[in-house]
Image (cartoon, rainbow, N blue to C red; front, side):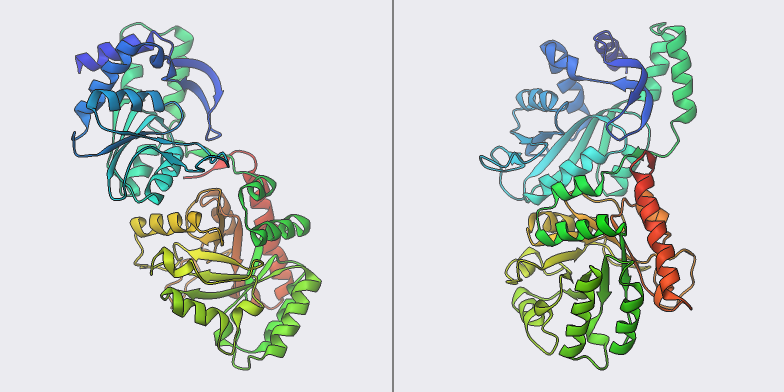
Length: 460
């Protein structure tokens, strides 16, 4: 312990902790800013840091080392040199030229990787890096953070099922600095303020639909965002009705209020192509997309047949179709869907007792990001900004009782906690006495929650 304290005092003298009023990458305001990059200019301290890190992990039970860009890259490099374990480099973004790879280096699928982070606050940067590493078929075996700000990041990573350790904790080092009389009086006051408020939930500033559109490459994803911006609505209505007449009546009432209509076409008793033609005409007139919630979940050839053949001929009219990826990535690779049709994966359902665990959800998200036909995913958590996030199970009364195991959340919770882009509302609208008025209430709630999220809002 004394060795670690002496080391921290040395790097503290490099100015790694600054006091003032800072806005962190997550959008959080903080009186402390911690920056380990000055250590890169001191090779002796960089090597000592590598030794301390290697003492904390079960070396050599991993085959690769990767640093979260960019601050952790020199640390990961030094660690690789010290341990003689190969380094891979995670790009922060795809430059669109050269190899276009997010992970650079020599590696093969199935290898175990040690992931290095400098400072962990919410864990968001770590999770994004993990997604790209696992997308390459690698396994994140261990995660090592140099310093934990003790603001929920470690807990969030552990909840995802990862083994993460930290070399230092902010509380410990600040108390040590105070004990060593290394702090000024006003800095001590800032520390007291920090400890008083550090249990406040993590914050993030969501990106706008305009910015999101730049990250979405599929034309249907872009079209959905254009409709959303033009009509100021992120509401998708789930019309789980069994008679075509009732569906047409509903969409004539609410078509101007929604950006999408979600259907289960196989439950309609009197399905006909004339019904589809009428529905398509209304969707064009009132400017919303048709969203078939078929949840294709078979092997690729069967998915292909279900999409293109049978009495429903979904590919001839639907703008969007949902798919499960339980059969693997190849099950949705060769569906030969039209260019004006997008896929939405189901990474996580909103039901109680669901069998999908965090490991499955991570893999589903990896498949979603990799497939160019996928515009987004259904999940109950914040996902990568390269995917549109659709949140079902929306109800103003999130304690709504039901006999089918459904789990409801409020529109505000969907946007503020989950980082949702679109809310999906069903019976709360179509079973109400006045579906048009109720749809407008959900539209206003969803749009307000989105706008509020453009400023700093709470997220767990």
